[in-house]
Image (cartoon, rainbow, N blue to C red):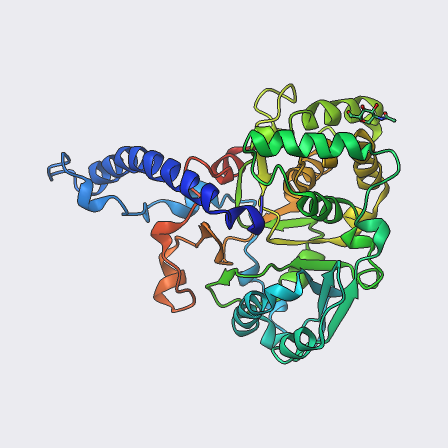
Length: 393
Ligand SMILES: *[C@@H]1O[C@H](CO)[C@@H](O)[C@H](O)[C@H]1NC(C)=O
């Protein structure tokens, strides 16, 4: 899932209806509990006016468990003399110039003006001069502008394009989100299998993925890249949620076949519990929302993931279905890693319509570090997988 589908008015309307219906159920239940805890002596029968009271009493003990490392507490990450070998990665069209400027401005103000990490902009068409001038003007970091090579954004020879077009038409008629879009599929496949091999990215070890029209609502005073490097982390996320089953009918079957053929790549203590509730029989649809990622480029470049991507790619699901890079990335991260290699960036407030991650700890707001509304935080809503993330071992 990402920006393209969120912009569809039909989708918005649908999801909004769902959200309203379910959140009212959810909050009625939750706020009653909060009421009982906080105001034992008061009447608990009318929680309506209190529907957005977050549970500030018990946030850290509930989900930031002991093993969770808090980067903000590591003073070595605040120095500005050494840098990680890292870049911001932006897949963007010329027409999205002002939406990406908005994202950049916020990320610069909140964080990168202190560190000046470079940007790598990628596009399947040449960037215009205007695009280059108006984006590079926003940062002191170096800016690179790259064209995506044709072979990273086209049909491999084993894909039957007649069938692909038929499947797109069927998915469009079935109103699968972006089911009819060809470019969306090339984008998902590029983000799944190729961005880390783009010539401009080969020089880097870590990346932070940035999209147009997102918001950052907390100051980040430390260097998340150094944090990843120092702790040998592979992947960092803020939001996780459930994928639409209709976009990935045969993905899990294909993954299971891969596991059978390549057991040597799958460590016993991996994070299967996050993506499956029955030990791997079924995919529970949980995935990290990959429009935000701070991660290790070499994980994607190494053999297990390369084999994994090639295996999926050969099956044709990127074109005959509509596999997103979010479930593909997330399943790989979970299969090949231990939980300690993945970090939840609680302190980075991130908004990608319609979802927000906002730290609920009072000090994030009392110090003026953040300006997001913690009541709108998605972490504890029914369509977030973060609770599962906090619970699993
Ligand atoms: C390609 O797909 C179409 C439609 O499903 C089918 O009729 C055709 O036989 C396929 N071609 C090949 C070479 O498999």
